[in-house]
Amino acid sequence: EIQAGSFIAIGCGLEESVRSLALSLLTRRRSVWLVVDACGFWNRQAAELSIKQLAAKGAPAPSDRAVRHGAGAQVGDSTDRRAGRSLP
Image 1 (cartoon, rainbow, N blue to C red):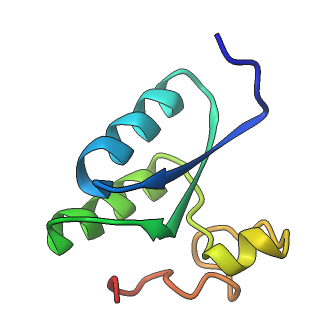
Image 2 (cartoon, rainbow, N blue to C red):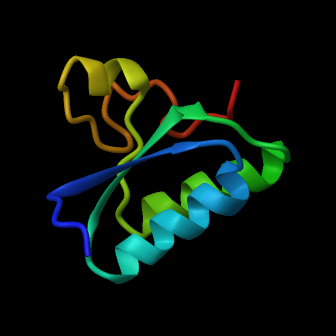
């Protein structure tokens, strides 16, 4: 088992692989950060639903800029440019 304080979830297949991984970690009471700007997707509608689902389960979704600058943005913060909006 990996001993880590937090996990950063990025990758392709946001609506499939990334969502499954993040939900599994959250089920194990791990801290997960979903960096939406660093995720790809095949189905926009499913990806947006996945982001909402992970946010509801407690996975913050800061922008890549907020992560790089250590802002620790939570979903809905002013530094999170995707909060409440669609994917670009």
